[in-house]
Every structure is written in structure tokens, then in C-alpha cells.
Image (cartoon, rainbow, N blue to C red; front, side):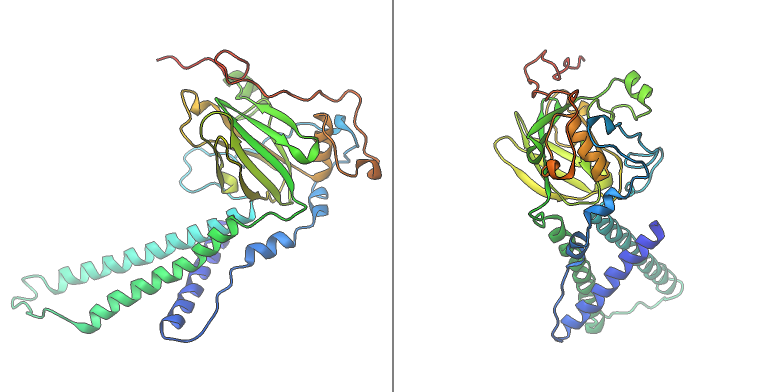
Length: 346
């Protein structure tokens, strides 16, 4: 997969260089970056529902927390590359990243070759009478124009990626809101009854018992449907936090008094881990993120388990379980309150 990604990224940059060269010599042209748009418009919500091999019954009792897959959606030991990507934006960005690595490698090899040539060709022994040439117009034009074309070629897919990251979610996207607290996360679901789930980090023993990575596992995950666009919003109750999940190539600041919004789409079911990436106080390092992406039918079951609602549930025959868990109230950030945790000691 990474080889294919590198080829894809390198081809993007090579194609951009060709376009840049055409533009530099005056040929008319227009560049469109709509690959990500086409991906989002082609999504069929039914595909996500078919991703499950299990028969999921209607009602809250159908939800069972998903077990994480080792190495998927989490850091790996001795990893030297970015995490594998599981979102359309992440795959596009990773292809560009790998392509740029190849461009840097080729430029470095070319500069090294020139350096070795100069050392061997123009040292005192091989060239006892040095040249007194002070200017070479051809060389100066080449080393000015070629780097400019390379930068222009890199800029084209870079701007396309930036634009794709901030496309507006479609009108029928499911809204999920993350609220940063000191020091834990709350996840609200305005489209499903506006309930909120509070998420705190598990202890090392609890994480080990569940088979999850320490300092990334939480008691209540942010659950979302897989394979469909999500209108993801962030805000904060106290100071600036930042919601970041590396394997989804997703990062969005959570700012008090402000509602930030960005499109999020997860390609396949799974558990994906992240952390707050904005220094937010003494327990900044203890407010991890765990995102669980489920097929749509299982997501609906989870919503009912939280006491939420599903649009059109009466028409589809889905009914809430009478034993559904009550709504969780947002926890307080007051020192000593549930969720706040004890402050670290020196």
C-alpha cells in the first residue's frame, strides 16, 4: 500500500511539474483539484452498513465495544513513518508526503553528485590553473527557473490538499461535536437527541485488561459511523484544546466561545487513537482521544444505548431499549470533581 501511495504521490508531483512548465512558457491551462470532492460525493451510506459481517439487531443491546486492531489507528513501536491513513484526506495527504520525500531524495542525490564532481574536477591537483569566470548566464537562469518550477509543481497538489481539508460537509452529514474540558473530552450528538458522552483516560491496569494501549484508552469512546461524511465541530469549556487523530490526518483546535467545523470521514470500521495536541494545563498529557467507527446499523444501536434518537426510526422499525443507559451529564472542571482528576505532583 505504501509503495502504491508513493507512486501516486510522485505521479501527482510529476504531473504538476509538467503543468508548471507549460504555464511558465505561456501556454494557457486550468488546474482543477476536485478528486476529494468526487470521493465524498460517491460515498453510499449503505456501503458502510454492509461492512459488518454480523447480524446486528435493532435496539441498544446490539452495541458491543469494538476491540482495537494492533497497529491500526495507533502508534507502533520503532515506527519511522506517519501512521497508516484511514480517511480520504489522509490518503491524499500521505501520497503527497511520500511523493515529496522522493523529490527531496532526488534533489539531494543531484546536489551530492554535483558536489562530488566539483571536488574531483576542480581541485588544485586536477585543475592547477583556476578559471576566472565570474558569471554564466545560462547556468544562472537554469538554477533560478528550475527550482521555481519545482516549487510551483509542489504548490499545486499542496493547495488542492488544503482546499479539500476545508470543504463544507454535505447538508445530510451527521453532526458530532467535541468539547474540550480540563482535562477530558465530551462528545455531543446534536442530530441524535443532543446527548453528551464524557470520555476519561483509563488507568494502566484498566487499559491492559481491555487490551488497549496505555494513555490512549478511554472509558467512553467517541462513536461515529464509518464510510459517511461527518460534520465535526469543536469547542472548549475553559482553555484552548486541540482534537487530533494522526491516523485520520485530522486536527482541529477547540477554542472557548468559538465553534470550529471541519469535514471528517473514516473509510472503514475500527478504533483510532489520538490526543489533545494543544498545551492546556497540568494534565494536558492525560486527555487522550479514542474514535470508534462503526457500520451504520451498529452506530444506530449505540445511539439508542445512550438514550439518543434516530431520525426516521419509527419508519424503519428501530425502537429504543427500555433498559437504555440514561444520558450523561457534562462533568465539571472544578478541581476534585469527577473527570477532572488529581493534579500531577512534582
